[in-house]
Length: 149
Image 1 (tube, helix red, strand yellow):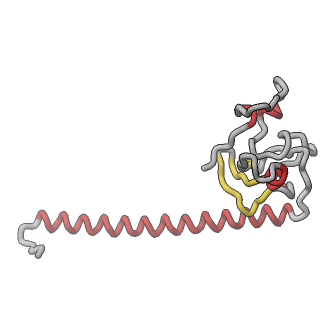
Image 2: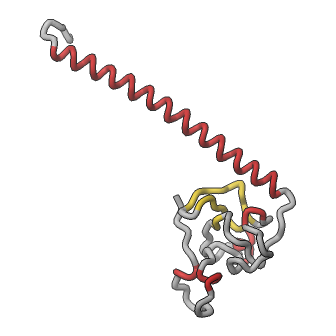
Image 3: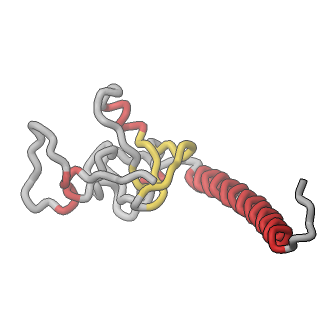
């Protein structure tokens, strides 16, 4: 799980922050602009710059890279994922296929969940089988008439 670092908590040289600016303090390091400076009611999830295909999980929920931040920094700044539920920044551009992109990202997550559940089921069956083998070996050890060779 990724830990999202906020600008308000960072110590970046030469960066001046307005005192008491709550939006600045809540801005993730990987965001292209200031938290909440975009159109009212929009989030990064519906922004064209968010790379939903490479989504991950963080301490603040689902997150993804902001490609606009990457472009603005020419790849030189430290890049970090942005929570998809963050209030959008001033660089916000509506994603024409937002509903389809969100549905696709959700479908990939659902597929991973099903895959992990199948893996858990397989491991539980293996554990049950090994426990049965242990019980059989313990019974053989207790029965002096059993030849183990």
